[in-house]
Image: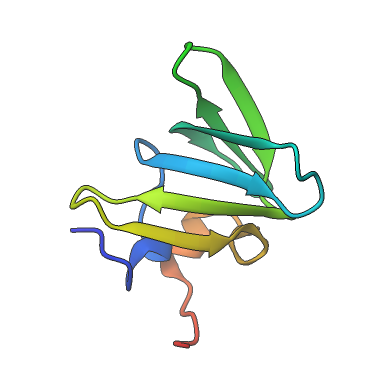
Length: 92
């Protein structure tokens, strides 16, 4: 089960996400993650359009299955998904 403590060690595809940008304040969208690369996340919006968002400079707020919302700085996600799942992160 995905929790706020282990979110970065799980697959993001299929999760609901809200995105805001540090660099571009007008960039705000939400949808479901449908693909992920080292530097980007592809999101399907409610109108079925797709948008590719750079991880660096973005703030992602993931909605977990239990309704909990977890905010993650995209800069720490800028590694390949398969490497991120195995990586150990420092606890804050």
